[in-house]
Length: 228
Image (cartoon, rainbow, N blue to C red; front, side):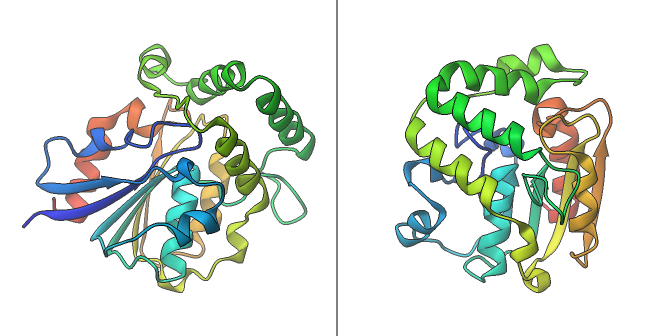
């Protein structure tokens, strides 16, 4: 039987970018363009959800997926996370985050020169990845809703998964590149400590986009766990 899958892509990425993982699977895939909204709350108030069997989230999209499931808006059987931030900006609670001064500079740069900053972000996403050249070709940066992406960047900086109740989080398949220069892989331990049924796949020689580093491996693992 065909399974319903919801996908939430990363910050400033094309919203359908994760569908490549399910091209040859017996499933129905819906991708949500949250960049059309000015905040998480605005997104919630103006989006209708059915209940999927599988939810997939990359980076900021993973954090959004966790928030929706923690609040029981979505109640999937499986959650697939690709390098999500537990908390983006470093503080006393978490040391493996972006220094506040770096976050401030990135925000200001994006506000002034969005296209140039997005290009730099793409390079950072593929940094230290064995497949970096191919990845740069396949990173589909979204040039739409740039002002909204600025608001979502602020949302990303301000939110922490320390605020979440993890008791509703289902079986989770988690992928993270060991060389991720955007979200330190050390943040994985915070999820591992809080999610009961947690399957952690470290991706060697991989940057911030596991699905572009080795999409066939991810598709295979997801299919095994989720029976698709």
